[in-house]
Image 1 (cartoon, rainbow, N blue to C red):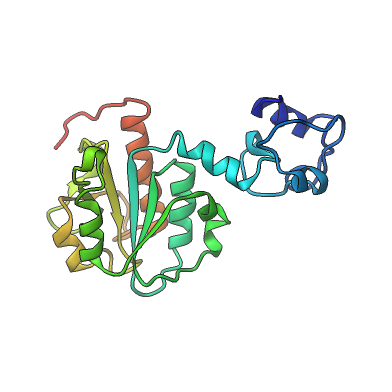
Image 2: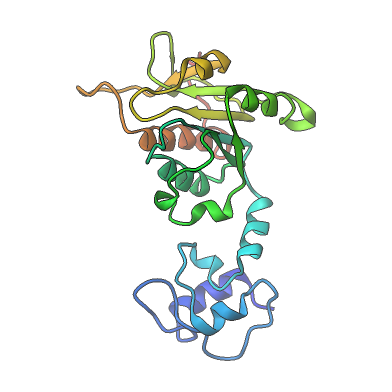
Length: 229
């Protein structure tokens, strides 16, 4: 049976001719790997996936991701069909979030996610109370998951010096108004990203990426913060 690395190498070698995006049809002996999708082997794989997942079926990729997702979740408020949600979800996929949560309207603009949402665990909560109900027992052993807001409001704590909990839900608000008052009241703490320019705030998608990467640095790479709150 071929390994994921074998297929990644084949993608750039003679077994799979290069195409403008992704890889073309498989060439050479037919691989006997149950993770591989026969249709993708025949037609080529031009999906937005890492090279090691080339030709893998959707089910095989999601099953593999499920074995190594991180312990943080991401929740995004969706009261006005925010176009940043797709960007947040795409980053949540890249950072290995346990799941993403849409709070408010169920429908959201998936275009910015670049199909990455299909490989993620998605939850919908009609309001803040429903999210709180879910987090009450969602932690390890049925313990609560703390809601950690990301917003630059009076009283917020610097993200750079706060020791993020391993199990948590990072909460993002709407572009413009930020986190709603109801969600702020539900958050255990609100963290802000230090800024040094003239703008009052940054794009919600960018803020989400910074917050998720801060979690990854702390809990995946073990980079402890100093001067923590």
